[in-house]
Structures are given as structure tokens and as C-alpha cells.
Image (cartoon, rainbow, N blue to C red; front, side, top):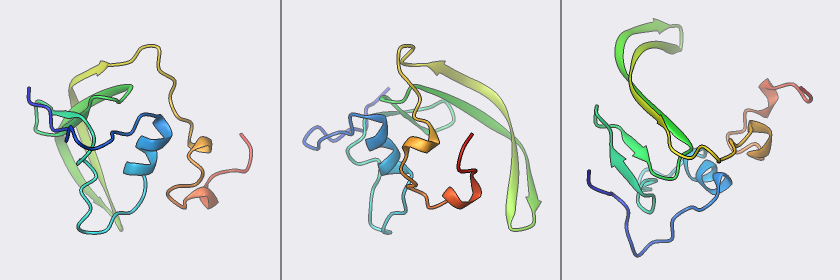
Length: 107
């Protein structure tokens, strides 16, 4: 499958850099995928090559729920890409998405 990385751009190399890239708001003109290596998944979604794992789902139901939507999906593909990798805990994202107020101070 084709790679979508821009070879002249520096790619994010740590989980924190990936979190910063995808976990923060972007200007309309910002292409968050520009310097990230990825491939096209079975349903057309981007699969990050530097991710620890991925899963793809086929939408089975899309349910309105107030100001949100509940989307139910059937898993159709997935893999553990980096078995030795360590997940990035939310507490290590340094509040990138400004949602710290909804989480307890300690776990």
C-alpha cells in the first residue's frame, strides 16, 4: 500500500510528539498527516505507521445522543504494530486537549 509520508519533513518520533500533533486543535489549513508516515486501511482510514496498534471498524449504527453521537462498529481489521512499545498515559499528555477538569487528580 502507498505511503503518504513527505520524505523532506521531519516525522514525529515519540508518543508525546504524535499526541501533540493529533491531540490539539488545528488551524483549518493545517494538514496533520503531512509529515506522518501512514497507509490506507481497508475502509480508507489512515493507519499511522508509528502507532503502537490500530483497529478498523465498519459502522453498524450511528445514534444521536444529545450533543454527541454514539457510533457502534464491528471490528474488521487490527494489529499490534509495536509489541515492545509503551502506551502514552493521559496523565503524560500534559493536558493537550484541555480536558483535565473532567479527570480526578489522582487515580
